[in-house]
Length: 298
Image 1: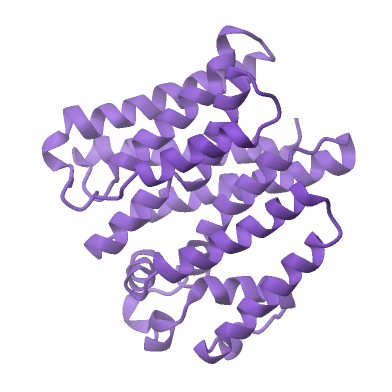
Image 2: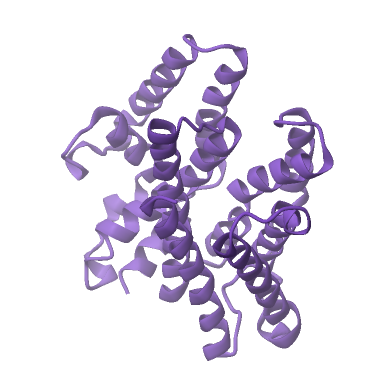
C-alpha cells in the first residue's frame, strides 16, 4: 500500500467521522441529505460483498467493516433517532435518475459479467454521483454549515488522493483500472468548485470580503481552464466572457487524446467532459456558488 491510498482512506474516514460527530453533538441532522447517505450505504454494501468470499488483509477487512457500519449508523441517525430534525422537504433530489442509469451502465460496462463484479462496478459508478443530492440540498436551502463543508472537503480529498494512488500504481505496479479511474475523475469533478472555494475563500475571515464577481462566475469552468492552461494567475483571467473558450479548450484536449485510443477508451475519455459540462449547465448555479463561498468563509 502506498502513502496516497493510506491518506485517501484516512481522509474518507475523517469525512465520515466529522459527519457522525456533527449529527451526534448537535443532536440534529439539519442540512444533511439523507438520500446521499442512503446512496453511500448502498455503495459500501454492494462493493464489499467480497467480505464473505475473500480475505486480503486485516486492514482491508477492518476498513470495509468500518465504512459499512458508519454508513448505516449515519442513515439510522438521520431517519430514526433524529428524524424530527431531518429536512425532507428540501432533500428532494430524484435518486432514481442516478440509480437506474448507473445500474444499466454497470451491466453494459464491466470487467466480468458475474454478480459480484457487476455489483462492484455498480458501486464504483454510484459513488461518483452519490454526493449530488447533498449539493442539490445545499443549493435549494441556500445554507451550508461550516462543519458540512469540512465533511465535503475531506470526502473530495479522499477521491483526489485515490486518483494519485492510481497514477502511482500504474507507474510502479503496472496496474490500471479504467472503470475506477474514470468514475474517480467524474467524482473529483463534482468537487472542483468546492476545492477552489474551500482553499481560496476559506482564508478570508468574513463573507463580506467576497466580491460580487466571485459570486457570479461559473467556477467549474474557471478551475478546469486553470488546469488545462497551467495558468498561475486566477481571478484576473476568470471573466465570464472567456467561459466558452475554456469549454472549447477542454473539448479539444479530451477529443485530441480520444483520437489516439480505441473505441472503448474514447467513450471513457469523452464521458467525464460531457458530465462536467451538464453538471455546470444545470446543477452548479450561482446560488450554490454563493452558499459555498459564505460557508467556507465562516
